Length: 391
Image (tube, rainbow, N blue to C red):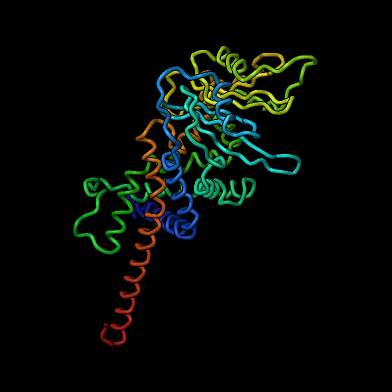
């Protein structure tokens, strides 16, 4: 056997192994793959499905304290917990309010939508999310098993989906001179051939988004592993520990939200307010998210922690100063959920969620139809061997 023939035989054996792994991983894990795909596709446009009322007033936004006060005016007996400012013109500001939450009780949370210019209350919503959104988030993030149990399972599903994407590309890769007919579903295709061509064509056109979404899901599920890996490859700084509390100063009154936001904006110039918490406990700091001016869609937020008694920013994480490894990690979630890079990427992420159920149907159909064809051939051969006419 020549060296070329030996190489071809080796590749044929490798390809056969990859095909079997690709097939059986896809079939055995088909249900969790479909769950992750469908829920992920829904969540890309969840905010559009459950969009709050539009804010129509034109002008400068009011100060955070005024917006919070407007939200509380319609919710007597409740306390504000946070404020989220509009991401784009026409969105309302969202004041999150809560009631109850005494010892042993879980507070009941609502959202109040306020026009940030006119301070008109546009509507309210019970809970942080709609029931459908809660269901989809739970299934997608942890199969509704809770983060400690379900998140690692989701992460390993992402590993399996990434493997299927890579092996699928290898198995599809056309031989020399066969590129012209390597994609597309031919008009005369029937049976297993039709399913194979559809399977391959969808896989090729959606491959980049499928791999990106699958792998970023792994990174989100196993963040510490990926922080260390990205920093080792591209450089990064040790993560800053989360500041849980501050020490109150005697005879000192905590500054209000407006003052805290002003300090954060001064520490991170050329940015605007994204969100801020309303402190409840005396040892609680302000946690403020800022959006950099001219930031790309989905860019990581600037995080500032403000000591309300010493009137100073005690921690600042600004993605504009990150090393490459930290930047890569910071982009994982927005790439995964479709918020990065605008509407085209959002659609591609949505499409990548439709791919798993389509792959399951076409892949299973190919396997089943080929299996039936082999059984018919064997039956004909057996019948011919014993002299019985085959049906």
